[in-house]
Image 1 (cartoon, rainbow, N blue to C red):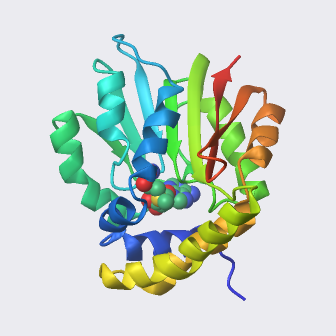
Image 2 (image 1 turned 135 degrees about the vertical axis):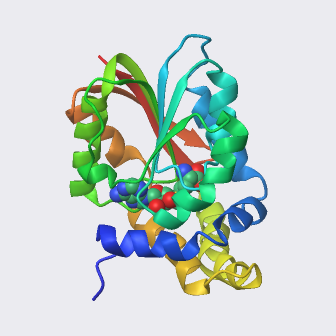
Image 3 (image 1 turned 45 degrees about the horizontal axis):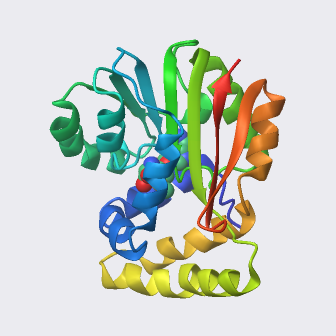
Length: 236
Ligand SMILES: C[S@@+](CC[C@H](N)C(=O)[O-])C[C@H]1O[C@@H](n2cnc3c(N)ncnc32)[C@H](O)[C@@H]1O
């Protein structure tokens, strides 16, 4: 049986999806992914200072224009291990940051980022492809790379508690999204994984516990009745 948390498997999946991901993300979420994106980035505040900002698991750079508006004088870095995503994000890097983006192609679970170097760390929709052991490594690393007082915020698609909402959300993510994936020139098997990961992930509660255990100050957030959840906080 395939191990869906094996980094090589996840990397192949995102390399394969990189051609259709932006289109799919935009059309199929009915604007919710953008709404949640704005909300979770809002937890990071805003500043005119020359901060060091890192967008983790950056995909096609979906967070970048929002981060740029919040931190207009910051030095930006972004990290993703999918060469396909990195390559296709370069245009956006030029448009949003005028080419001044430090784009790192590395596995976050085995990276060369400098310790104590970031004021801000953001990450959208990247938690569900990690198992508990990998989340532990992630938490340790967030605590390592943040400066003291540095802030972080994560968001992820989650399972709502309301049974009726859960029924429709599950139907949409597990049955309709793969069909839409095919329609928008993606591979339905790739998009079928969205529910498989979400089903196992549940919500960000476990992530909160793991991050707290690693010495970070953490708040738990629910978005739209639990259809997404996240954590935000700081290094104390
Ligand atoms: C669902 S996409 C999210 C992309 C983007 N942040 C967004 O908001 O749409 C998850 C991204 O995380 C990347 N990723 C997953 N595991 C990773 C790892 N261990 N190291 C680096 N990048 C990883 C994938 O390549 C993919 O681009």
